[in-house]
Length: 545
Image (tube, rainbow, N blue to C red; front, top):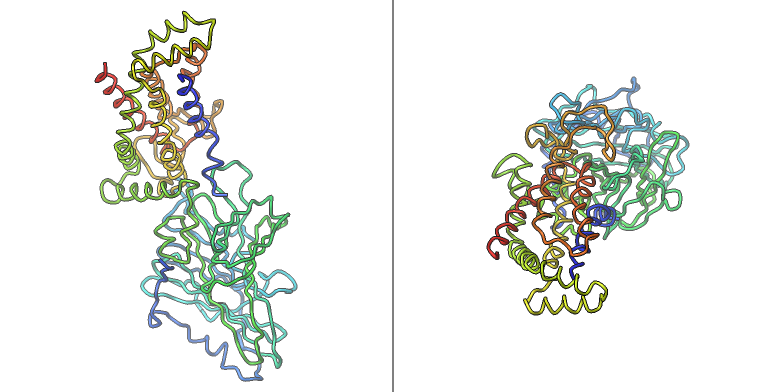
């Protein structure tokens, strides 16, 4: 029975080292922001560009001008929209940066290096790239500033067959929501039945290993589908009630959200020439009579994977944040951490420490029981050593005598291990939350730790260190954590088997190597957990001595 501790230790290490892939990657009706019509600033030229249609009418008159890029500025982002394709060519977040520090460039979600832009609108069977459609706009300026009221920006394209596309963006001053209304107008003399396609684009994810999913994903009621890029060649169509579809990274995402979700198909494509992933939403349409129009409403999201932001957006966009198998534990932990940060102390490192203390208090009775059992086991070590010496050649008799010893002193070796096992789901949930929470991205703690989402490195240098991922430096916090594990190991009763005892003494070193590339927020949690556990174990050991 004394081997149970060894088994639990191995299980814990394997859970930290391996279970990330298994647990952490997840293989209220929607609340819509209401924008009163009076707040929407409409452009005067729009009614002239698309007049009231009769059964027969002349083509839409759109101004012939040089195609340009219009910059949209809000307090949350800056977007550039080109008349060529009426696509979003660049999207830059104002409140997030590419790296820590006030001088770092702002986070780019859509880069100018993307040859197509994103949010393309076209028809099935179009010849050429839908991004090549040359739109004109009703906006005569170069910069559209969105401060107090919502603003709109309309683009128009006319085909040779009499079809007209109106693509209208709506921007709101304090929201990541971008409204997108697509109107298909039939100015021909016969009914048409075009299949409308809306395409989001994104560079393919890096090939490097990541513990969080990155790539195309969608919410097809009732579940999230995450599609590995390597699987697109085999399966590239997904059909169902599509709530939204787009791309996710570690901390940010983009998505197309139909305002009225319906049964439809999303097609994925890897364009190796453009080095882009394409996610195309198929809009089911009905025949449009001559002189009539159909209108379709969508919303676009480009922004951080913060649960309050996604929840406010609605349409179940908050389901994009999922902390794996123990999500139901991780999300309350995230809420508590944010509450501590917002209402107690504005430092996420301190918030992690306080939350760790709260979790330790929650499991304090289980910890007491575990450490009391360990202390009783430690008292029996001399008697157990004597039994092993006397019956070293008779394993069966040795085990019988050891069990008799447990019964005599009313010691249950399992009572020291079960409390540890009971806490494993909370450990995993807390780990996953800290690894994926955008709140910790570039969040400073103290001294050299200026990013709780990155490994701690002091005195960075060019010298390569085995098992360490760049940047290279001294992982001070991780070394201290390993030292606390070693000290805690010394407090625990050693296994009777010398080989097992040596392995157990190696565990702090193994964990230190494992944690060397973990985010400093995770290391801080484990360090505080160890320190409190040492104090609790020392107190119980002294009390039962």
